[in-house]
Image 1 (cartoon, rainbow, N blue to C red):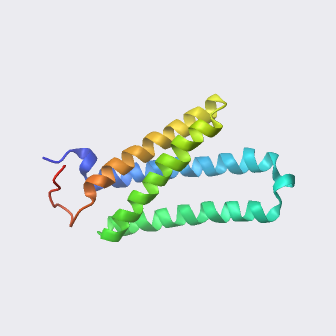
Image 2: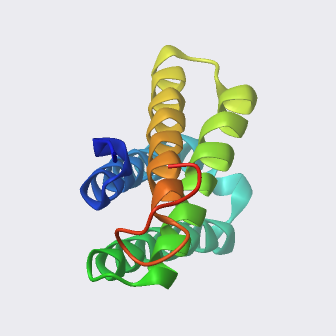
Length: 136
């Protein structure tokens, strides 16, 4: 029997929760990190920073829309995005930048939402919708 966490709806909701935590992280980084070091970093680095975040967010939205339409490739793309959110923007950032309470909360939310989205999407991988996985 499948639980709610293994449903396509849960995968989409948790993936969008991870995406929203990533958008919050992008706004936080843009305001505080780039705002303080803007003169030292230069315009080109800031532009590449923002283009990178835009590409990640745009790809994530595309993958979520394609997943809602039933695309198998989008399942894998969303799973990779959730893992990036969990490991890179969550756990690694928590150990590197976790100095203040707001950062700790933000990185914690990113880690939890990315991990739950990855777990939900992992149950979606392996075949057509509705197929039984050996570990599900």
